[in-house]
Image 1: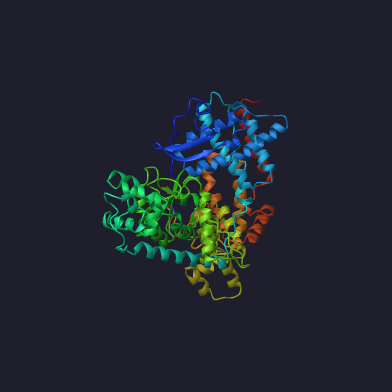
Image 2: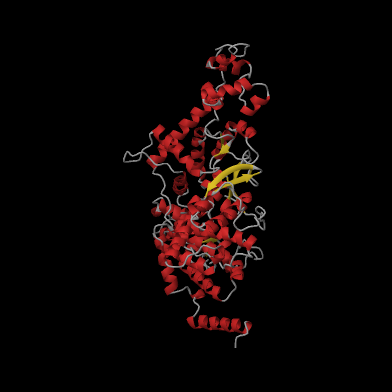
Length: 626
C-alpha cells in the first residue's frame, strides 16, 4: 500500500461553546445529539457519567466541539473510553482525593491516571492506551478553547511505548473455518446477483383501487396495491415524500396496512437494497481480501476507486482516521475493485435519497426502524454483530469442534496476514506494506498471532543458506541463478571479498549510488542499507546490530529532532532487515553485538563516558550553571 499523509492541515472544530460545560439550558438532559449540516446523525447518552455533572458536561462539550471534523464512529468510541477515567475518579475519591472541578485536573492527576491504568490488570494494554488517548484528545481540545478556566497540563510522551509488542492480537481463523466463510459469502453474493439482475415481471393481479366509493376498502387488498404499482407507478420505487408531493397520497397512506412502504416493496421483490443483510457478504469479502482495518472500511466513500498513479490499473483509496485521515491505497486485489463496483450499483438509488452528510458513503442501507438512509457503522458499529450471527446460522459455519463460529470482522485482518504470509513465503516486509503498518514490530504481532513463527524465514534469510550451500559444495551456478548475478560475483559475495561495514555488496566497484565512480570502490558504506546492491545474510546481523547499538548511543549527544532526521531511517531499515530472519537468529545476533561488537562500531566505554560528560558540561554552560 502506498501511503500519503496530509502535512500541515488542521481542520478546526465547531466554534467553541462560551461555557466549558456547553449549553447551560440543555433540553436533551444527558443525551447529546450530534448534528451535521443541520441534520441529527447520532445521539450519545452520557447518563452513566452524570455522577460528576461538571466533568461530564465538560467532556460532552468537547465531543460536541470535535463533531464537525470527526466521524461519528470515533465520537462514540470517545464516549465509551471515558468510563475508565470515571473509575479512576472513584478510586481517587475513596483515597480522600475527590476530583469534581475541571481545574483540578492538572499534570499530577494525569500522571496518576496513567499509573493507575498501568496497574489495572482487568484491561489489556490496548484498552489502557485507548482510554489515555481519548482523555488526552478531549482535554487538549478543551485547553485549546478554555485555557482560562483549565489548568496547564504536560502530557507524558508516549507512556505506552511498548503497546504493540505487549498487545495480544486477535487470532486468525483456521483454514477449516476460512473455507466455510469463503463458500458462504460467494453463495450469498451469487444469490444477490441473480436477485438484482432479474427484471420485475408484471403479475396482472388486482384492480384499480382508485374510485369514488369504497376506495379505502380497495386499498386494503394487496393485489390492488400491486396493480397500482405496476400500472400507475410503472414498477418504479418511490420514496414516501415523493409519493405525497406528486399526487399519490392514497398509495403512500396504504403503507400502514402492510407495516410500512418498504415492506410493500420487499414483498413485491422489486427493492433489493432495503436491508443491511444484503451488504454483509460484500463487507465480509472485502475485509477478507483487503486486510483493511474496520474503521476505514466503515467510512469508505463512493469515489474510493481511483486510477493508480504509476500502474495501468485501478486501486482503492481508504482513509485512516488515527493518522489524521491519511490516505492509503489497496492495489493488491483487483477483486476488491469489483466488490466496490457491485455495492455502488446496489446502493445507487439510496445515494440519491440520502441526506448530504450520508450520501457520499459506500455501505448505504435503509434502516427498518428509523427514517432516512444510513451507512454501516454510522452510529454504532456493534449493530453489525447481529447480522453476522444470522449469517453464521444461515450457513451453519462451525469450527473443528462442531461449535458455531463467532464471526468477528477484526479477526479477518490477521487471517489475511496469515494467508499472505504463506503466499509470499514469509516476506514480513511485504506484509507490513499490505497491512499499512508504520513499524515492522506491529506486523510481527499479526504474524505470530496466526501461529506462523516457524515460517518467518523468507528470501533474505534464504541468502544466508546460500553460504551453507557453498560450504556443502553446491554448484556456484545454482546459487548465482537464485541471486540473479554472475558466478564470479557470487563467489566474491559469499567469500567475503565484497564485504562492507554493514553487509555484502553485489559489486563493490559498480555502485549505483549517485556520485560514486564506476571502477572505484564505493566509499559510502553508510548508505548500504538503502542501496539496491546490498546483500544481507544471517552472518551479517552481528555487524548491522553492532552499528544499531552504536548509533543508539548517539541519542544522548544529539537533539531528538536532529537524530531522527539523520539516523531515523537507519533504525527503521535495520528493524526491517531483522524482520526477515527467525527471531531466535536475531536474538542471538543481538547478544553477540552487545558482548562483542563488530570492530568498526566498538566504541570504548571510556570514550562514551568522556563524550557524555562533555555534553553535560556544554548543557550546563548553555544554561548558565557553573
